[in-house]
Image (cartoon, rainbow, N blue to C red):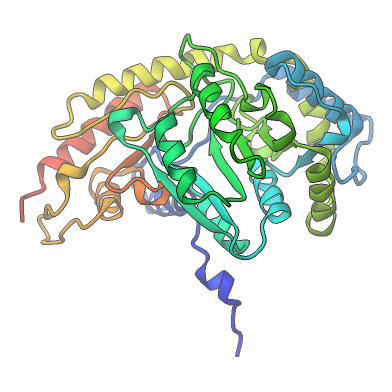
Length: 403
């Protein structure tokens, strides 16, 4: 009889991908579902990147690539980090992976022994906690409230670190998936000062949404502060900034010891990333933010449009994200309400399934992000469908009754 390992049995499927599957299943049945559950830009890849990919094919880049990535790509990443983030790395400190998700997994494998603690502010990206636990670590979650725009304060961080002074790592995304909250230069400077008292803690900074940022306040990497670069792992990639999700290229910049460890780990699991994709990414990174600014401008318009639409939803509490392309409003006022079929809504998962089945709108429940009774809206979709989605949600919510 076949039997799966305990760790696989305990591993949960990514909630975002699971909701995407359910939405797709309804679409195949002929239901017109508006899918706001997937974190994927809806833009086509810019032509200059396509041209670089075609050139790579014509130049016969069809063989295995070096495990850590082509040297010219790693050098382009160093150039990008210097240009955009004022960070100096050598190419030997860069590891290119099959998406930023693999970069996060690599560094957690490299760092964690059984029982090691990792501090994660909530709301957090859906896979952080599960990855930590899968690799034998213990996730310690710092909750943040919608009233504070889902950001933790310096004082909260100080208090939490006193509880877990031996934590191995601090893992967060900036700008954040799922909330879009953004820590700016002044806030990160305060965090860096706090971390000085915990020199053995590694900071893992997921900066995949770096180019999608709406605030006038300065966005920097925490690695840029004094004494932080040699203990920080910067995670980034091209899926969100350049709408290259299907190309699956991410990277890390890390202290040499950790980069070498991740190179070794990757050599045993996937080896080098797609060779043609790597060559296209060189063009993307050298082109830089100015080449894709139009995407961020469009996301800002969509954010403002969605926030305006959400104002009309009864008993909903929202916030104002400053980056990424998500809003994470609270539907806590609907806890315990009942559908016309008599089903009691016990949590946001119940509510998300109700809205999928009745409103035909797919949203990701906040429990997956450490945010109970919240639903994540992805506004990587045109304004007309955002309006239709909110209208359909309002109609479905009106049909609920108090228990």
